[in-house]
Each structure stands twice: as C-alpha cells, then as structure tokens.
Length: 171
Ligand code: SAM
Image (cartoon, rainbow, N blue to C red; front, side, top):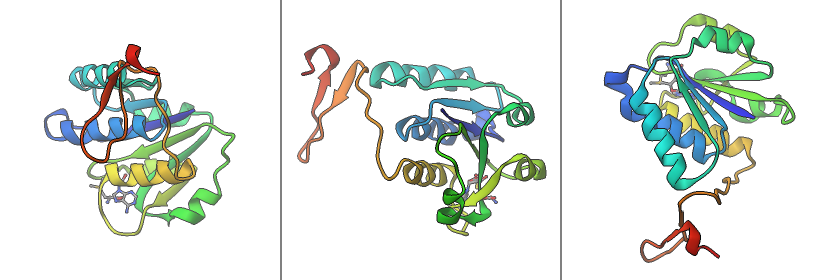
C-alpha cells in the first residue's frame, strides 16, 4: 500500500500542481492520496478521473499531516532536494512494508524531516514535487507503469494518433 501525502497545499495557488501530484500518484501506482488542506474541487476532479480511467486510488483532503505521519505504520519517505541520494535511499526501503511518500510545496516544517524514516532527494537541485514524485515512484516500481483495466475508457497506444476504447468494446 502506497500513500502520498501532499503538504502545504494552498487551494488558490496550488490547484493545478496538487492535481498533478494526485494524478501522478495514481498513474505511477499509489493507492491513497492525502492533502493537508480541504479542497472539495480537487477531490471531485480526481474521483472523476479515476471513474473514467480506472484504478482504485482514493483521495482525502483536509488531513492533519502530523497525525498522519505519527500514526503511519510503515516507512515514510520525505522527498526533498536535501535528502539522501535516490539510489542509496531506495536501497534502504523494505518493499514488504507500507510506504508513505511526503512532498511539500513551499517551505516544509522541520519536523517533517524528523518524522520521516528517511529524506530522499531526486538530484540535489530544486525542481518540482511532481517531477520528484514521478521519478521516485517509477524507480520504486522498478521502472514499470501499473496497468488500469477497469476504467470506462482505455487508450490503445498509437504512434500516429489517438485510439480510445470504451470499456465494453474492449477485448
Ligand atoms: N526547498 C525544497 C526542497 O526541500 O526540496 C524545494 C521546494 S519545491 C518548490 C516543492 C517540493 O518539491 C519539495 O517540498 C519537495 O517535496 C519536492 N522537490 C523539489 N526538488 C526536489 C529534489 N531535488 N528532490 C526531491 N524532492 C524535490
């Protein structure tokens, strides 16, 4: 079970980037997305994407990050440019344990570094929570993308255009 915790979400400023955090979490194999600020639009949009494209990922907004981290029974990875190098950090993780991945927005409170099992960087340059999350989850799954078979729609990879099947016409 993989949980992604997004902290520091400001609905007016971060709508698009937090939506991308949620979409990347789902597409790259996370089961649960938690966001620290209540945002019903975000919940609705994400749930609608899951209905159309499949999977069972859930989203909950308005959580208390401290409680979520303290009560989490598993390993917690905080993604930050200051953390351990990706390969070395990844090697310390136990794939049998539940995983929580924490990403920030602007400044991340010091205690997040301390409540985490490990702080991991995706390169030691500042970039984006969306990029860091995608690279981390992709590496965690051994460079494989999960498959979604139960959506209303399914894309057939097409090098020349767009091919989308409705689920009931699927093979
Ligand atoms: N000073 C921040 C940091 O500690 O990484 C950069 C802020 S960045 C706008 C927002 C979020 O992107 C961070 O909280 C972190 O989760 C993620 N992030 C940015 N660069 C990263 C990197 N090189 N490695 C891992 N995560 C990164």
